[in-house]
Structure formats: structure tokens, C-alpha cells
Length: 147
Image 1 (cartoon, rainbow, N blue to C red):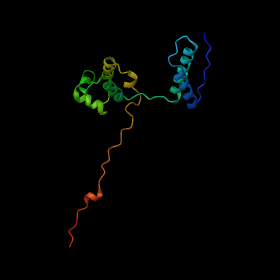
Image 2 (tube, one colour; image 1 turned 120 degrees about the vertical axis):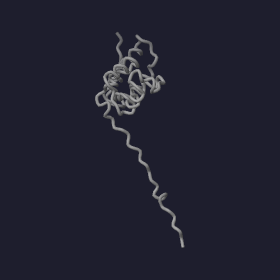
Image 3 (cartoon, rainbow, N blue to C red; image 1 turned 135 degrees about the vertical axis):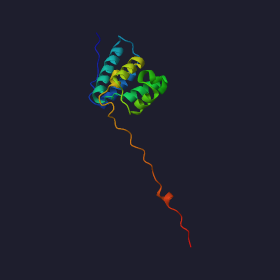
Image 4 (cartoon, rainbow, N blue to C red; image 1 turned 90 degrees about the vertical axis):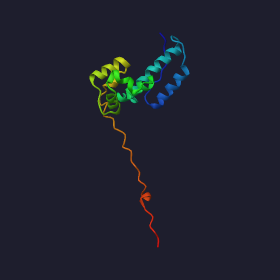
């Protein structure tokens, strides 16, 4: 059993110091004091980040689009999992929510985590603001005939 000196991560400054130490220890062999310190620090860093900087789950649409991007899939290739092209379009635009059957097929067929496909409040993310059409008031002024 190896004794390892580790720092306690209480704030983001401590986190930064721990990350810097990990960079110094990177590549250390397993079973060595440095390797053990690297392992302990990685656990502490993960615990701190999960508690203080959690990463929210993606929405189902974000998860599907991520897989599509990673695998270079087109909408047409989602048809076996979601249904006809129109349904795929409706799901990806957020007009139609996923059914249990679709969720199962997407999980089983594409390996999308269930947590991402059924996340609580998954469809509650705010939608982007509508595009505002700027009107040039000067463009509407018609020249007058002089004299």
C-alpha cells in the first residue's frame, strides 16, 4: 500500500492546482507512487467537478444530432428508428416528441444513452429567440419632386 499526499479541493483555485499536478503526473506507471497520486487526484477532481460544475444532459434532439454528426448520418438513415422522413423531420425540429418505441429503437440501434433520450425537462429548454427583421426607415422614404 502506497501513501499518497493529496490536496483537498475546496475551490476552483485548488482545482486548477490539482489539474496542473495531474499534467505533471500524466503517463506515470500504475502501481508507482506517482501513478497512485495521479489516480487519487483524478478521483478528487471528478468528484469536485461533478459537485460544482455539473454538465447537464443533452436534450434528446441534441443527443440524436450528436450521434448523427459523429457517424455522419443523414435524416434518411434515422427512418428505421423514428419512422418516415416527415416524422424524422418533426422530431428533429422539436415539433414531435419521441415515443417509447422510438426511444427504445434509438437506444438499441444507435447506442444513445436512455438518460439523454428521456431526460426530465428534456423538451423544456428555451427556444432561440425569433429572428428580428430590421427595417431600414430611410429605405421607405420616397424622394419628392422639387419645384
